[in-house]
Length: 404
Image (cartoon, rainbow, N blue to C red; front, side, top):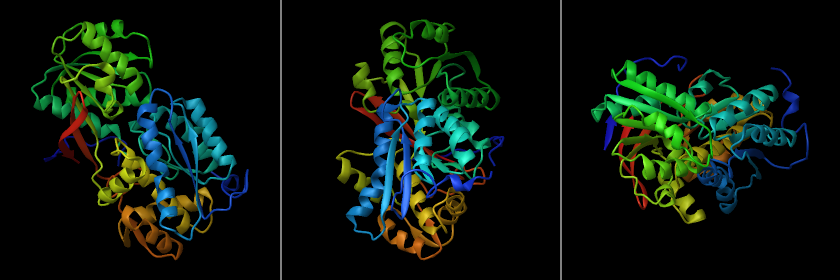
């Protein structure tokens, strides 16, 4: 079932020279019609979710090769290891090799660092499929966009669900980075200001620690009715092991997309039936075609942010073929031209035909696997849908959806 979530406030803030340093002018000579870098976490705290996101990001290359397109598509992969400095190094390597646009990063902290140090100074276009920090909205929307929604919206969704459940007191327990802090602040503001709830504690934690007992004791000390946890799977496994071993008194827990892992209950050895989650949906016009492509290639269902990663790479390829040259500035000029409304509809099912149209100068409108993918001037999506999910020993199941 789909529920409309009415907006109760206006989200604040939503609404260089040197182009010769990008593609075709530096580094190795790559003979390709389109060159897309991927900058995603195959290892590190986000590796559990990042590897399937990477798989989706490179899927258009395999798809187009299998369909025998006449264009040469070159996709190069770099692993961020979920670390900003590693992400910067990987992004710079892609720039030096001449890639004008990049799918990534995933972690908001990595994306922000990469955008500031690499994308914007070099006029390289980055489209993140998974970085949801509200801070990204205020960056340069010409060279940093995203196919995932801002957590300024997800915080509202989580607060609204909590209020609907009759929750009056909550505590938050969040990863000490841009993602964790941004979603924490969004939830706290909405829960307090829009729903008259009371936040008893806000506790930050560091990733991949051997124990979270002391932090959990601080967060749960005043007996909140709900604990909102923001983190990634590697840390989440230890957090939930500690919670169920020493702190489980029936407290309801709410988590976002960063902990939407089918492996988590098995890794924790608990069905996690007291946990409710939210995550961006994949409900685009091309979702069925994408899902079939993903399942055929990888033998499993796509997961969180996988459709968003496919869309990011597909948009890069179409924009590059529409552009006058393989420079970041030329690609940037075409992103909204091929993604926003008007023109011949292109989706994952007819992507090969879309390449021909883009190269021939036909006006096109890409409608994606994750959504219709309409970017506003800040590079954010204009409309989004969220899944509401629950866990059991087999993983998670979506039980409801919210629309903005």
